[in-house]
Length: 78
Figure 1: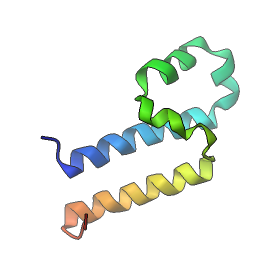
Figure 2 (figure 1 turned 60 degrees about the vertical axis):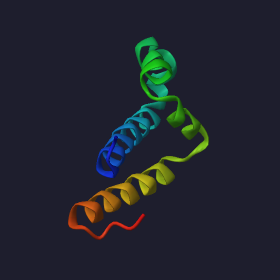
Figure 3 (figure 1 turned 60 degrees about the horizontal axis):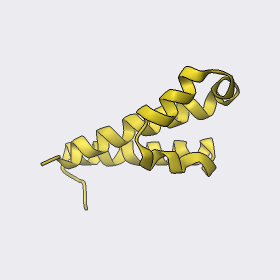
């Protein structure tokens, strides 16, 4: 069974990758390695982030980081 902490850490990892690819948008379309990484390595549930702005992704990352901190300090509420 996967713990809440592991789930949050995994989500943060992939959200940061999505953010990195969004920041490098110009190279994404001309670099087949990055396209393959996006298509086959990043889990499909994060592919839905296409229409989400970088600022919104940042806000989601910050929220997940706060949730992870709260979880570690015992203040996390489900």
